[in-house]
Length: 259
Image (tube, rainbow, N blue to C red):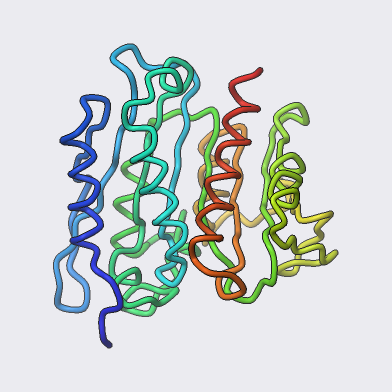
C-alpha cells in the first residue's frame, strides 16, 4: 500500500517543539517492526519545572485514518509548549501517535490489519499495544483525553467515563462545539450504545474485561475521568475537525482546573 503521510515528519515536528522549549521532553518508549519497516513509539512530557498537580494523559492516532486527532495533538503541544500559566495547574503525558503504520497508510488498522483499539488487556497483544500498556503501567492520571474520529458520523460526539458525577463535562464540551456552529450527532444510539445529545456515558461495570479499547483499559487502571472525542471524519474539512478537538480539550481543561 502507498503511504499517505509520514510518521517521521510528525516526530521531526515534535522534536522541533522540544528544541524550542525546556518544558517539553520526548522519549522513545519502545520499537517494533511491521510491514518491513522499523518504528518507535514516543511519549511526550509537557510540564513546568514544578509540575502542576492535575495529571492529564492525551492520546492520538490510535486509528490511522483519523488524522485530525494527531494534528490536534501537535497543535495543542505547539500552542502550549511555553504556557507556564497552564502548567502551574496541569502536567501532561502525551502519546502522539499510537498507530504509526496505520497513520502512514491512512488505515484504521495497523499494517498487519489489526485494530489496536481492541487489543488492550489481551494475552498476546500487538506489539504497539504491548509497548503502550508498559508505558502507562504505574502511572496515575486524573483525566485521560482520547482523540478520535468517526468516519461514518455526520457530527461530533464523545464518550465519557466518570467515576463521580461531579467530574462529568461531556455536555459542556458538546454545547461549546454546537455553539461554534459545528454539527452534533444527536442520534439516540451511536455505535450500538445509548447516547443523549452527543454524549455516550456507558457504565464501566457493564463493559467486557478483555479485548478493551484503550479508554476502558485506562479506566481499569484507575483513571477516574476519561473522555474520548469523536469528530466527523469525512463530513468536514480537517481544519474544522482539528478545531473541534482543540475546543473540546480547552473546555475539559477549563472545567478540570476550576475544581
